[in-house]
Image (tube, rainbow, N blue to C red):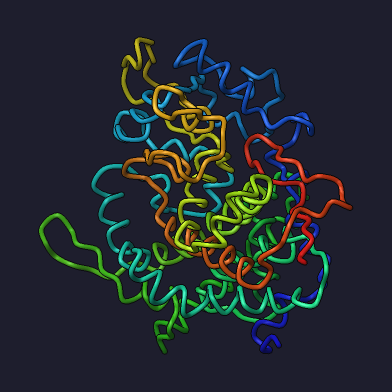
Length: 430
C-alpha cells in the first residue's frame, strides 16, 4: 500500500490525463498525427548536412508561436558530424540563445543558457549530486525504487493497464518533485503549475500564467529557506551545501537565484523527457519481443535497451544554438548571428556512424548517441533518467514477465516532432 506521502501518485486525479498525453503537448501543434517524421528528417540529412531554415520550415509545418526568438535567420544541422560540431563547439554555437526563448526565460538563470567558464563553474557545483554513484546509492534508494514499487503495486492485480499514465508519467514527475522536498498532493499540483508557468503560458490568459508562476516561485523559495534553516535529505539541501570555485580559487555558496534556477531546471527538464522516453523504450521492447525475452533472462541487458531507445527514438529530436561567428560546417557556410537547430533525431540515424540505423537492436555495436545531447551541455540529470527507466523496466520484468502489448486495444503509435512519444503504452500484464 502507498504511504500517505505517496498516495497522490496512485490517485485518479484527471490532471494526469490532461498533462501527460503526447497529442496534447503544445510543442506538437500543427504536426501530422499519423507521422513520426523520422524518414523525413533522414531525407533532409541525405540531401545536405546543413540546410537553411528551421526543421519545421523544411518539413513544411507551421512554426510554434514562441519559435520566432530574436528574429534570427535559421539553419539546421542533420548529419552526425555537423551536430557533433554544434554540440561540442559551445562558444561558436552558443547556448546563450536559450535566453531568447520565453519558456526558458521563465525558468530563470540556469546552466542551460550559459557558456564557457560561467557554465563550467555553475555546473561543477551541482555535478556531484547527479553522478552515477550518487544516483545509484541515493536517488535510487531515496526515491526511484520506492516510487516504482508503489506504482507497480497499484496495477499488480490488473490484467491490463496503460503504462503511459500508470507508470511512465508518474515516475519521473514524482522522483524530481519529491527530490526537492515535496510530498503528497503537492507533487502533482506543483508540476501542474510548473507546466502552466513555462511553455503552457502561451495558451493561457496572462493572469492565469502569472498565478501559476507565483505559486511555483513561492513554493520553491519556501523550500529553499526551510533547507537553509533545517537541511533535509534532499536535492535542495545538497545544492545549499554546494560551492562554486571562482577563477582565483576562492569558494562561495550558490546564491538564492542560482538555487532557484537549479530547482526549476531539474523539474522542467526531468519530467517530460523521461516520461516520453520510458514509454518509447517499453514499446520498443514489446514490439521486438525477442529483446524483451533477452532482458527477462539477463537484467544486465536493460541498460543496453534503454541506450538503444535513446538513439533509435530520441524524444526531443533537436536543440537550438546561436552561431557567434562566420564558419563552415561539413562544407556549408553558416553566417554569424543565425539560430542553429541541431537535429539529433537525424544524427542518431546517420549510416556513417550507425549500422542499420533504422532498426532497434540492443546488441548493436556501441557508439555515442545524442539522445542526451553531447559535449559540455550533455544532460546533467541523464543518469537519474537512465536509472528511472532501468528500475521501472526491471520492475515490470520481475512482476509481469509475460507482459505483451494489449491486442484488444488500438496499437500505440509513436508520433510528434518537438516532443515525440507514444500515444499510449497499453499492455496485457499476464
